[in-house]
Length: 49
Length: 234
Length: 222
Image (cartoon, rainbow over all chains, first blue to last red; front, side, top):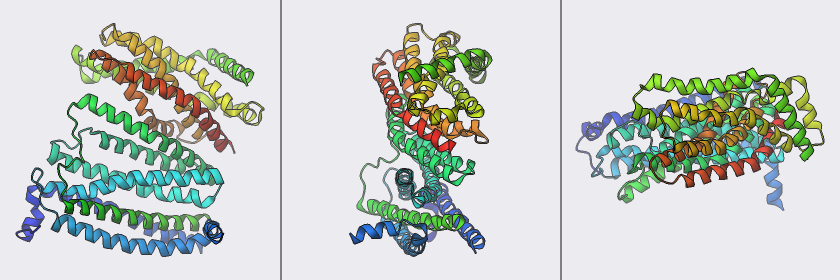
């Protein structure tokens, strides 16, 4: 699969909104979970010590 | 004999704690690597689809997330059942640790499904049998988490959640079947969101890699969370 | 065991009859909810006829759930539930008896009132039989499943709403087959498949729910 140029890649054949909307929210959801876990780890370490 | 001893050795939260930490790190690294590989295949190897254009590339995360959401619920119910049957604290903690990750993937499956549905079938929400079942699965996850959050007594929370998870997992096939039937009744020609006419090898590889990446990520997240729970409780 | 079931059944029915307002409220709720839909979606007769089975079923579902919170609350408050836990009679049988009493008081009347709602929606008369049968088979399942939720949420704050969140996803198959059976009949097809599935759900829930309810009661009462 070869994209003509980077701008073609980001455009996703006109479906940029859908593709990046999907991937973006997925990345955000994972990021939120990781951040929440990190916060919980920090808190639990403080209360455990 | 030695394997039997090893098994119960790690059933104690104290001894499980360091093991969980090491496995979590390994799985996290594996998830990142496989995820990168999967994304590469999905965006730079798999060709553009003849009918759906590049919109179909959502399939790589949608299908993986949906698989994870269902798989994690079963695993959660498994640990819940073990905890209820054998009264082991760690099993109950594992069940509680898995739930948020499972709910997250269910949400992702629904969101990506909606964004895929719009370009492919014209509407964000088409009441497809699978998406509707996913929605109900999300409610089951949230119900589990809400029930445990509402109970102050830890032991009661563990056991009540466990029973709910078991009742849920038994019902999931029934719910799926009933929604499947409902969908064919009300939609005539069923539009199956995951039906791709012919799957190029690259597409299959992309989905597989992302599914494995999500699986390793789930293990890492659940183990990290169970370590938090162990710290909080012990 | 039979004696225990009879005893609990009679007691619950007597208690319910002494408080007719509780029972009547749930039934009134059923009628009110069903009457709200035309106000929301418009009174076009064809549309109403089409949505009638679903509306009646959803209203029955919500009404049944409303009365579930009461199922164990009163006995829990005055200590009777503890006695039942410690007593000689198997807790599963006691639970089944309470569910049966709940259904007789909260589910069966729905079957009786449903034709009135069907009349409001101008449902063709031949469908009344299928509707009644689907409700007759389905409402006990709702009572059984709902009782599990009621036992799990015993004494919790925010209990009613939490109960709804837990139980409504589990209600989905009953709703689908219940309303679906009437839809099939409306389309001129045989509703037998759906009704048989409802009967199967009834048998399975009657067999397994008492165990789950008893376990949930023990979990909640420790």
